[in-house]
Image 1 (cartoon, rainbow over the protein chains, first blue to last red):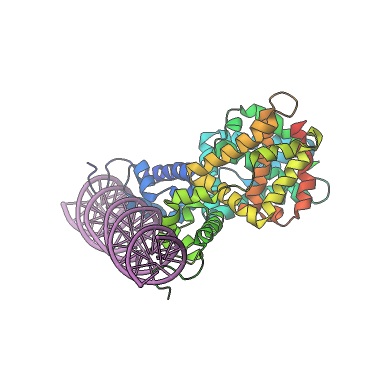
Image 2 (spheres, rainbow over the protein chains, first blue to last red):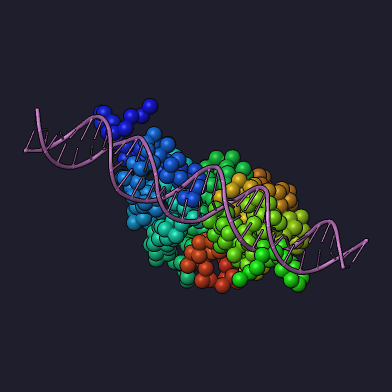
Length: 191
Length: 191
DNA sequence: AGATTAATTCAACGCTTGTAGAACTCAACA
DNA sequence: TGTTGAGTTCTACAAGCGTTGAATTAATCT
């Protein structure tokens, strides 16, 4: 079974490995995800993973290449003025998390933030630069940065409970309900 | 150095091990914390850890024995009526997290929730039973449980960012400020 | 057709980990 | 004082990990 040497036919194994890696990192976090497990998920020898992506940390970095452009994000959030920013950011947040394709790298990043320095840095950079830096400059009032950071903390808290830990009272609720409930509170941080 | 056999003098090594374990689990999470590292922290042989606490997961379970009685907590939060519940719960939350002694097991639990099934269960049980079950019954309005869960998610989000990840915009702010800012939003979930 | 390069697997090394059991040393009590 | 038992360390095993270099097969280029 599975002869050695190059496989016949076309090949996009690299993408298969990356997908398997995202799934594994998202499901188990950085530490518990193993290169051997990822290789098995891609139906490939472990050495091939290393051949394409180098070290495990390199592979992780490639796995959390986020499906979001921070600069666009800030613009979209503020597009309809400050008074709609709360609902906008909440809606975009949940839309991205509910889509399985975009959820995988986000989950990998969020879980990885607890395991590896790099994961924490990416999360800091992403939310720090994207949200705080850009959005905070556009909302009124003093010490906008703290208030935006608190809004972000609410969003992340819900992501942790709903998507990582499967907290029942939050996992069972339809997203629309969460958006309706949370938007006003997020908005109140922006006022 | 460190001859074999029993040490002279009185002995409360068990407590030393537990403290070292809490510190290590709090700092690194379940996976990255090693029994050897914990033993070193307690200036003790790794086998002794196993002798006192059994398997690593048993030790972890002992390490997250929380310094809070859920039943008392709910009562304290609601003691002055619903209209003070938001500020009360926020204050208690931060007070507990700011005290290094009570912070260690909380951190261990929070980090462990991502690594081990048991950690997630404890967190679910703790916040689920303590907060949702008890508090939700005491606040007015429909679907109180969802709203309490959202309030909890905000608190946990801030704990993750401030105490686990060291998110600068939240770590550098004095607690009083956070309490002032967050209490109204938490309260608005209870109204 | 031959040579070169890319894709893939094989086999193995070195390390760290959790855990187990035997051995040693002191304290407590008869 | 002698014996038992608890405290403590030593040594070791078995498993899993990330990683490496060489070998094998297929595609591609001349």
